[in-house]
Image (cartoon, rainbow, N blue to C red; front, top):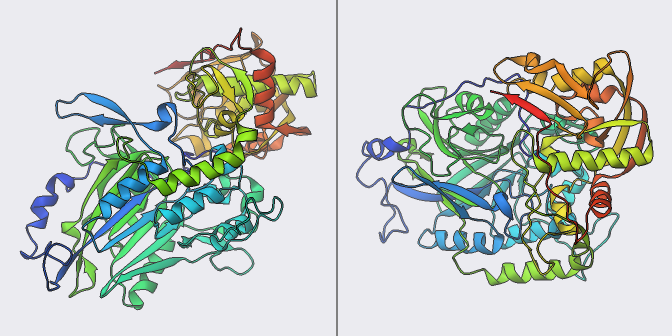
Amino acid sequence: MPATSRPSGRRTFALLASAAGLATAAALASALPADAHSGGGHGHQHPSRYQDVQLLSFNDLHGNLEPPSGSSGRVTETEADGTTKTIDAGGVEYLATHLREAREGHPYSVTAAGGDMVGASPLISGLFHDEPTVEALNKLDLDVTTVGNHEFDEGAKELARLQNGGCHPTDGCYTDKRFKGADFPYLAANVLDEKTGKPILKPYWVWQKKDVKIGFIGVTLEGTPGIVSADGVKGLAFKDEVETIDKYAKVLQRQGVQSIVALVHEGGFPSSSSYNYDCDSPGAGDGISGPIVDIAKNVTPAVDALVTGHTHTAYVCTVDDPAGNPRMVTSAASFGRLYTDTTLTYDRRTGDIARTAVKSANHVVTRDVAKAPDMTRLISEWNALAAPIGNRPIGWISADVNSTGTESPMGDLIADAQFAYGRELDPETDLALMNPGGVRAGLTYAAKAGEGDGVVTYAEGFTVQPFANTVNLQNFTGAQLVQVLKEQVSGSNAAAPKILQPSANLTYTLDLTKTGADRVVTDSIRLDGKAVDPAATYRVATNSFLAGGGDGFTTLGLGTDDLVGTDDLAALARYLTANSSAASPLAPPAANRITIVQ
């Protein structure tokens, strides 16, 4: 199940290039009284009318306690001369140090997160139902987070356990200490119990220090049911983000809270992959696109800033609110590689944020700082429990198997593994398809620990496929198979295609110069070198998420003669073990099954 699943087609995807942004923040701030940034904590003995509040935020950690490997552990930075470079980033040992240093000198500081703190996690966290990540977030002094779609991977009851504590109902306690749960509130304003009609967790939370109060409202994307397994969202209703935020903004205002931040697990796509890209620079093609633009343009002006996530991209942008005033919208990429530092200037006279004085920037969680000792101890303790399982070799590779691109080598490898396993279950299996969002990482050739170069461990495989989906076989007509391929670029996937990763025997052309379903060139589709017969029956292997119609592939939910096999990670491990050795490692697939015309 994807972390970066695109939203439904109901939203507007117009490219935004705001005229009032970071470049003008200093000029806008000059409109404030001279003491606008002279509040307590900066050497002044008496509180002034204005108080700067530091808002530190991050999103989409996904249980990445250790530094992510490969491209997942790097960010791109634009230099003064216009060139770019990559920087190794991430790891909670370093994130803790950076956040603690950032808080120094800021007595008014609050730390918030934009969802997906857990779920799709590496083995050190995922093996233990993400208890290690919650413990790490407690140590990071996280104050509040919204839920994301991945907080529902194991259902609402498990989410409640992460909030409230207690041993896992099936696996029990992992240590001699009872899991105490999160010290911070999870907010779920737009996630309702279908029976009661009430939010399953707190809809909002108010941070207060002395006379300064800021309210936080948390929502996840309304389309969560389409990107999470059906069991994970059973009995839940997901409501519109804008309507929900507006509703609780009024509730907060009635309680005397005028300063409001929305934590929204939905995001956008900036025009540049550089974390320090000037999102508000004027010019054609600048700005951000995607669903967060529509949300930000419509959420009530009572909300002063939006902390967002879900798309794993980095941006600090201004988007005009319904009143035409610029409002800060931020995202700190993913996996703990960045954090956002935003200054909210609180007006004691009105109780509101002086919007024109808001400043924000993303900062890299570099690995050139001292590791936080408490995080090092936490990682060591959980790694010791995970090691007997995680260190087991499951295969060998000759080079990095990357997970990036419209068609990725890692996605192809998983599809090949599921096809091979499908043939074991039923020799009549014809092909396999893998959803791109379920490919959580690639495999790196360089040794991560002491296993040796090229060795793939179970822990590394778990990082690639952490969902415990099963491999399912279903029958489809040839016409349905063609329709599945067209659903990659039509319907709910029209604006943001989700390109399925095919097994090696399926090839076709994707013409991105066309629109909608026409982007899949029907006459080019070949299975084992032959055209697909619309009337014939084909046996298709997918994971259980796709087999349930997930990610907008409704036709995949219509298959017949279902056969449920083992979990997808076991299928990948079986394939690697059978097709590689230390003397004959597996080469990365060429990722040439889809011919892309642009």
